[in-house]
Length: 158
Length: 211
Image 1 (spheres, rainbow over the protein chains, first blue to last red):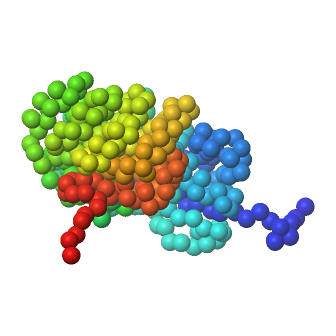
Image 2: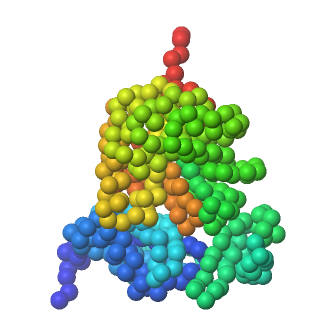
Image 3: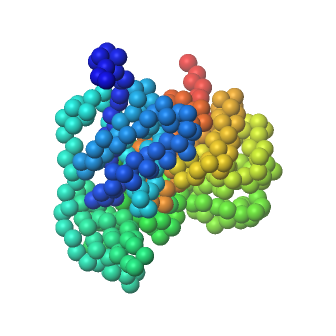
């Protein structure tokens, strides 16, 4: 049954950026991480009030909540450290009242400038350079990926 | 007043280099960071030295080996007697790791002494982000008690991410929200983020001006 617009629940949308650059979590795993963070921090009652939902993944996440609970959701998002077993940082960039408004804000994806192999401490890493002198070192092993975060001016990656 | 992240731990203690953490801190809204064990000159980075010892005497001997005024000297807290002793030492700027100390390790007497000596108490935000369940609840409860003392005695308070990775650094907005978990208002959080500047300048937050 459709509801009158005036009777519909008011929502808020958070644009959340994820680090490291290039990370692309599965939306289901992202939802699980957000729900876990909300429940662990605020408990079941307040988490149900927040009612978080991952609306889209467009290089960044758009996460929906009930109006008035956006600060609680942003706090819970700040406590997310892993998504699907991968270490990430989730940073809330902005909050908006409509999906249209949040999508209309220009938020271009960070482009990869170059990739090359470097050796740090006898280990070989794939160095991915991003704008702002950021260089992520990725070592792929049997047990998964290890990442180190350096800057272009650091001697190790020059 | 510059906004300062009270402590970070760059490579090799963590997985991110000092320069990278400084870049990240700038993007997250900080003017400066205190980097434990940092060497070399990086803009926006204050060098930090963490002293950990079981007795005040040993802290004093470690302090004598630390060049004066070159770095922010932080001491890992212990029990009440230790903390009071350390607060009285010249050169100590910050008392850190208070959430790991026994209950009552920082009471009204220590609070008054910290206010007089201008020694800041660091509230570590790492457990609020990295811990879950009872451990996090204990830290929040502890910080709430310390906040009550702060509101009564006005000793310097700092907030630190204690990040070992850029992935654990948090923005000013996130830190204000996290500080709200233990009842800290936004103005108090902003004051705590900038209090280290006053502590390092060695001046009281209240200055008497004769007219």
